[in-house]
Length: 226
Image (cartoon, rainbow, N blue to C red):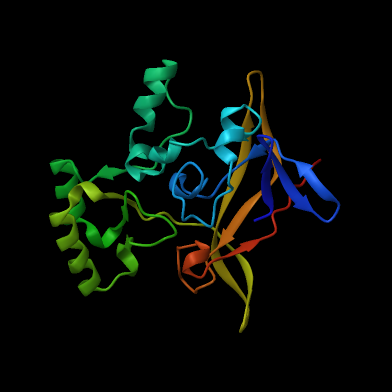
């Protein structure tokens, strides 16, 4: 609601008047991005944004159509993608990931449901997932039925031991699980680490789900510079 398009340029409404915007990192799905181009009933998008994009006056850091990368199964192919496009071995190893659409992987997952985290390939926000070690037998069996019916809709990974840090709770300081998301800008000649990051915390005791939609919160992230 703070963005407006004039003459194929994007501006942000501020207390000091309109200010030109050059880059947008969006959290809105393609269909809702611009009611003049996509869904006309969208109240989330910015009318005229796609015209400004086509004119080259705004950069969408995650361009239209890149939503395919949100499919969690794509993650499991990253080592092969790196080798194919760069001809190099990946520097960072993937978390082991089983694609339930493949019979061999599905058999392993079904035999080890109580130890794995199972996620919907199109899921987000911590919804529709199973954390085996924290799940009841009934929940595990219900997920087993889902996997047998729609194996192509799920991946599975080991349950990772997230770090904890002191967190203010109603009963005082207590450890809660956290994860850190750094932001890295890659240019043609160098890589820049943004001096900050997003630290998410699972506010529920014992929970490994840090998503805000599941009751998670955030922490200030400090960078100590020598």
